[in-house]
Amino acid sequence: MDYFKEIEQFIIRNEVNKKSRRIEENNDILFNYWNIGKLIMKAQGGEARAKYGNKLIKEWSLEYTEKYGKGYDYTNLSRARQLYLAFPILGPVAQLSWTTISKLLPIKDVNKRNYYINLCLENNLSKRELIKEIKNNSYERLLVKKDEIKINNPNKKYKLIENIKNPIIIELTENERIKTEKDLEIMILSKLKSIFKQLGEGFAFIDNQYKITYNKRNYYIDILLFNIKLNCYVVVELKTRELKKEDKSQIEFYMNIINEKIKEIFHNKTIGIIISKEQDKFIANFVSDESIIPITYIIKS
Image 1 (cartoon, rainbow, N blue to C red):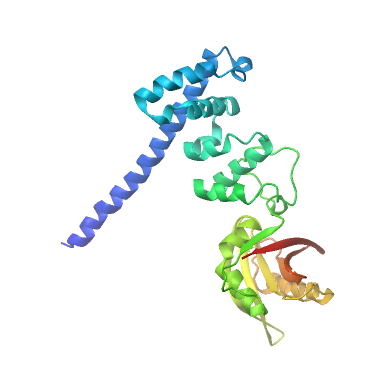
Image 2: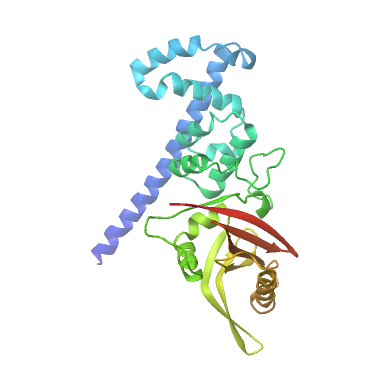
């Protein structure tokens, strides 16, 4: 008998059960707070009156905190009421943790709040990651803001333009310097997750200096990605200078080769990104359907 493997099976089972217990526990906590909020609202005389006067919550929170701890203090009871008022039907929000939702409820702008809810649901953000997105003004930096943002249906068709941030923020350490295209490539590869998360969702890394052969000549694409949500390849070219007319022709040439030689019939057409430098800022230029969308990168050191 392989005792190591036998023990490992019990460890795996325990970890899976632990995770499922955490999910179940979170659902209970959230559902309990939702019900607490519902009852507080009713005790205050309904939704119209629940928006005014917090005397009842103040009184009850003192008693509950003394008996059961700070989880039922004034702030949490107020948040519970906000939870019910914001979501009379929990729906997809039930997938989020109470600690995550408690960071979202103070956001009064419904579109802004729904944007961050979608961000959490689609990317499984931790509370810390959510706080960072809010601090970096992720919503304010959206290139295009819809008049109304609803909590997403998981089957909704993904649109890249609705998820691009502008500007893109890149944080450099003291030792990082960008003088050449190789420096830029190394920096982007080291921060791939952070950078492309801001460019949208679903980017997967294929390779850097990706070799393609066309008419017996070899060409090298700086970075090749695939976007799972858009179901297409993404060609990335890097320039440590201002964008030139021939850069668009070059990347369209690479995009056409990928479409002809790599893309499968069930994939959508390849798109391109040219990262160029303009004065002290880098610009990510999206190339698709004969148009270019420029997005600014801000370097923070």
